[in-house]
Length: 91
Picture 1 (cartoon, one colour):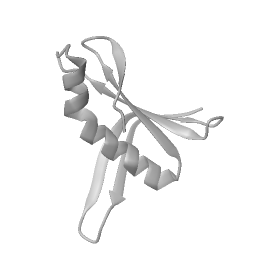
Picture 2 (cartoon, rainbow, N blue to C red):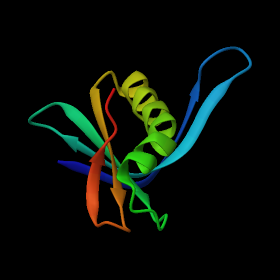
Picture 3 (cartoon, rainbow, N blue to C red):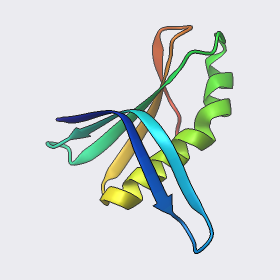
Picture 4 (cartoon, rainbow, N blue to C red):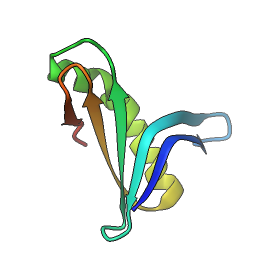
């Protein structure tokens, strides 16, 4: 595995637009040939569905960007500190 913390990225999406961000944790699984990204959320919200709904666009943008930059499959998850668990964001 290859692990990056606080991985910055900048992806040009058109002549006048780009997506940039900072991925909290990016793990490349060499055996699976895919990435997993994890974003820590410290919101004091215990409604996990609300957290997923709130942050899904951000995580999908990060996942799509990393997939475009690397050509590899990317799974994205939220780690919700208020409930101490990983939350899948769906597609």
